[in-house]
Image: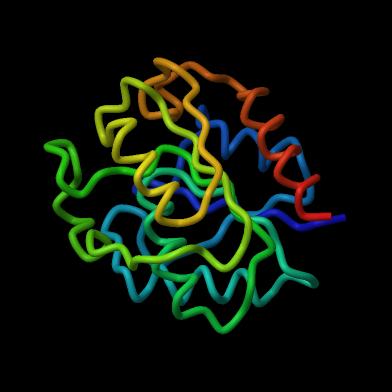
Length: 178
């Protein structure tokens, strides 16, 4: 049974966020833990993710949201441990007006393909990043790409509940990893 690590963005994904709901519903899923959810520090978040991946019995699957999509790209270039794949949901564009200034350290995303299979999921009306930006990141990272239509930032405010479509995308990615 493959372990799954959720990698929330700023704020840590509250109770109504699909990541939190998935953690409650599936004992295979656990969350990485940086020092601060509200004041993201790239070095700290990279170390926290590497520590979480290193604690897994086998290469885990990552489920990243928002800022943590950029984190996964940074981490993958410097990691001491490996992941088996990643679901990358709603990558934010550092050039977007809504991009939080406290996340400036994540903005210079490394170039090149990720060293594991991945899927980028984006919304057509995400205030933090356009479809064109998300598609460009998917192409750059060697990821598959899915546009799920107008679903905002694909977070708790999007009213997705348990987000069964996301669970289906995760299950399809797991099948690719076998």
